[in-house]
Image 1 (spheres, rainbow, N blue to C red):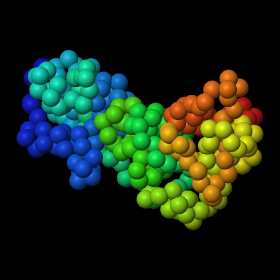
Image 2: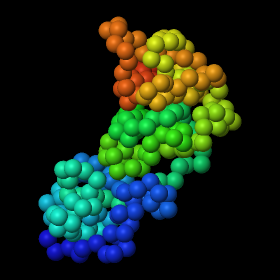
Image 3: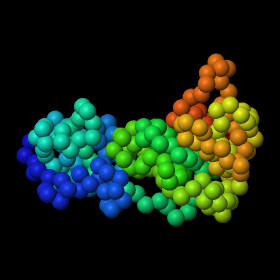
Image 4: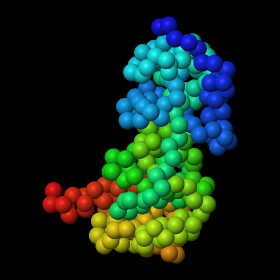
Length: 255
């Protein structure tokens, strides 16, 4: 495979993007892993600045050769953020959110600290056709290596909007005409399968894993658990709620 090695600036950018501070200084992120990079290239190839990888890793993707950079196995492993690298990292531009908000409801994350959970929720949003995923400062960085890898690049198809606090998030939502607020509680509130208006110009909030999101301005809902188990994690709860919105939408359409 006759490909150039990454230049000094490209290597410097790759190392910087491995940190949150580096991502704040650059409008890019890293997307690592064969499946995640393939998803990114399939849906958002225009976002990709270049791909760096080993000979085996680059052989597994379909992308113009002029945007490929080759590294030996050992050098790639030093750049990788995983224990068992798959040999390819894409550097992609972080998308700018659309100016307007056009969605039946907004899905919001308050203090979701685990990047794996954040990425999984992003995938569920994309699968359910929900484009507005808002989050509070203090949540994990949605553009970290692990979050992007867990999201399989789903973040690139969403409007990810950050707010300093949940109050500021809800204030902005209300300004845009989203006047109903619901938060998921592990035990209290109305069943998410019965609550009226749950996805009607509303904000549905998932709180941090340890204690949930207790908001005086929002009505509580819960996911019924007949097995009497303590709780499910944030990503599982988000997926249940997101696909309850799909169920209701299809029922309303007679499907």
